Length: 138
Image 1: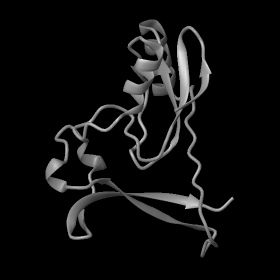
Image 2: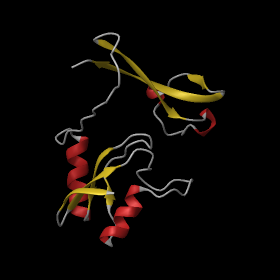
Image 3: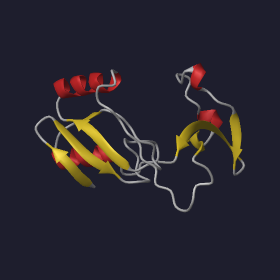
Image 4: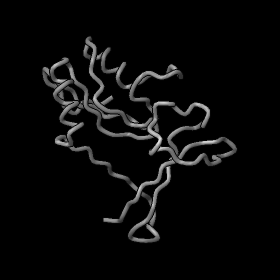
């Protein structure tokens, strides 16, 4: 676990690939719990990264900071950026990326907005939900 920034009200840390951002039913060590043990206090989770994704996550150390930073994120004043590292040559300057949101369609959360739903597709014999992203080469 690598801490990039810490002060009295917030903390920025690197979430390694494969580690959940918060506790889940697997019981695997998650970043939020590890950081709460490190700081000795409860932290506000401001956003999440999927388990397979590594990157910087921001946590609030007090309720006022959590409310302020959550509003900044919600109103797009605090920007999130995603960087994808690829190996090899891209076949084209623009294209699509398909990744899976859930491993099993039966566990699809009912609160997930309908307009965001996409069709179930097979993934190694297991039904899954997918999202598509557009990307272009820099």
